[in-house]
Picture 1: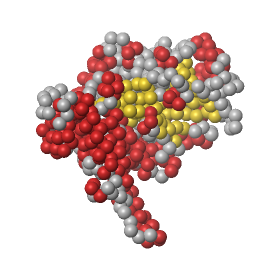
Picture 2: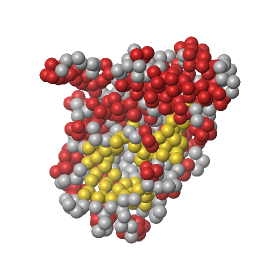
Picture 3: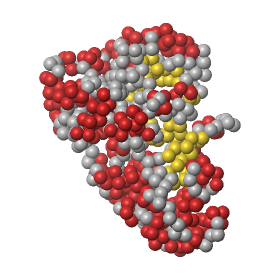
Picture 4: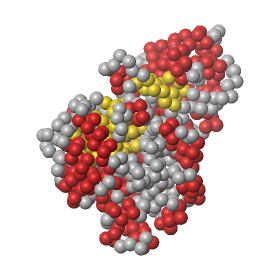
Length: 596
């Protein structure tokens, strides 16, 4: 599937009937009409023998989906919203009119769309390969299907076994060696290592000490140097550094990507003249009171501490974090009390998410004071603590902290919970699992929010993570589509890949392993469930191959006045080429084109 084959010439050659119909149009409106007639004919014959697969519901669904997408894209209002006319581009291609701005990624989208309308195109979903038609019935049919399921899961295992696990004995031994080297370099001992305050005091913030503790590639070194030159927030705990391997670019790619900014990110942030423009979620417009964010009726966010022990590169709130453990990050008890008072005055709010920044970077005394005041609000029935310290600094979970959190957990009256962010199965360690286990022994549930970046997007990689999360006592909660921020382009994945993962991979996990929800976060409005097509429309394919989606708010069912949000996605062909460059077989992903 080389990009060079996707040209206007290739498109005309492989879809002669489609473009012959268009070529006869006298003007753009006539071309639209002919496209609609063509789509109607494709749908009408999709259930018949003409396709050769009249009984295949999957083929009929593909034709239906492609027909719906093309109908949507050629509407004048869709073209106006997207700022590009797909109908005009197709008509020009049919008439051999030069369109130099159209890229191979655009032609690839149209190629697969045309093939889908014909009931063709790749079908590489594992279930379509292994779960074939069975003519028998009763127990013989059940046994045949059971063998098919065995074959299917052996294929799933093959993928999952290729990914590194932090709980693997070899990984544990490797990291103990890394830990010992770091302890020696920092002139410490094992007791110091297990003290979370020591971890915070020894956060690595600059390039020179970083290079003494982990080997960097030249590109990593250049990006970190530029980031620190311009004082971009940067910091890594000694513990998290021990999770990196001695050689860059291997098993630990996802871990490094969390904290070592790529050059595209650094340059993107530096190009932003006003940091507030990096506020993708529009939090300034959803903050009715200092330290409060509210997008839904019954829940709000309280942000008492505006920094973390470690900064994730693609942090949603990078626009308001000044530095790792910045001295002025704590809002102060007066402002916090005022914010809690505001929550008290809004009894519709039944759940409070305390996040930031990372609230567990604060001391126990301060945290206790905040929890006590929030728990004292009679209408608050759930308190969540949003923290990544389980991953970056698991020694933070001392017995004192456990008891502090647990004392507000009153079954039948109030729940306290921890929500964390584990990004890859290589981040899961015995230390983290032990902390989770002790939380659960105190009655505190733990949930995970995954950000679906390029570095967790290979076949069954996220499914492998969910499997390990459940074994560790953590419930998968949300999978977030990576924010559409320009500076995080190196992390972004096409929405189609996340939907493909959810429908072809995540569903194959047994019950409790399949408990999370894939969402797109709409700025100023909140989560939009990707499993529900009713909340998004595909408006266009831009010349560079980027799909333009219109997202509708969750409010559309309950409000007469809702706005929509346009998102320009990552071109699928570009993403597949990137996978190919890291050694992935692109044929394993080809059904991605039919997830809209």
